[in-house]
Length: 252
Image (cartoon, rainbow, N blue to C red; front, side, top):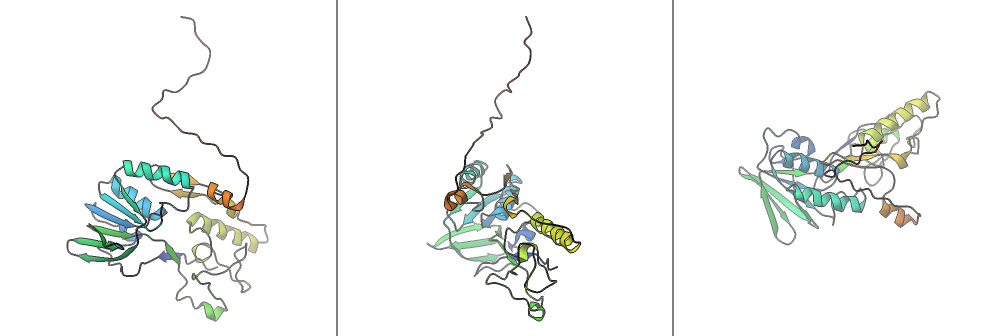
């Protein structure tokens, strides 16, 4: 079973140095709260790290190439999250194509198309992850990866080579640890002669920001694109309102 996971993706013109320019692992190992932090990428990892360091006191700027943050979640939920994060003090700029970054003893300068520049003490590059399949000598086993470096598998995680399976980030699908765990359990069950399976239409996704955001199943945009009829419900909580009480009334 191949379960080697993934590695942080990089951007042309930007090299990790482990000090000023870091990946998500490096962003968990700062020895102090940076005065300023630039985050390139507004996906799950980028927004989680931005939210954490902003709450700890850093001045955080998020730069995203797409027109919205958290492109993997429902568009309406993403718009609401953007408003909340901005109220928390995060500076969020979308439609930004970063072309380079330069670090020196004072900090990092990020440049983007249009001659735009930002400076901060630290830079986190969180533009996704790539399958970790290099150096596995896959060719010797008769295996080949697709154009994105992933191992093609069937619904039961079997590769084109009999007896060889691959799970998690090295295959197509959401790069989530709980997905990989469930796939590993499924493969073990099937090897034991049982009917293991994974419902890939019901894999939850969680963004560990404040507030947390959770999704499961298809988004409204995906249903519209597929021409699927659906019913929509919205519940807006009101934490400042007094709770309604029910029960028997007492005579005064």
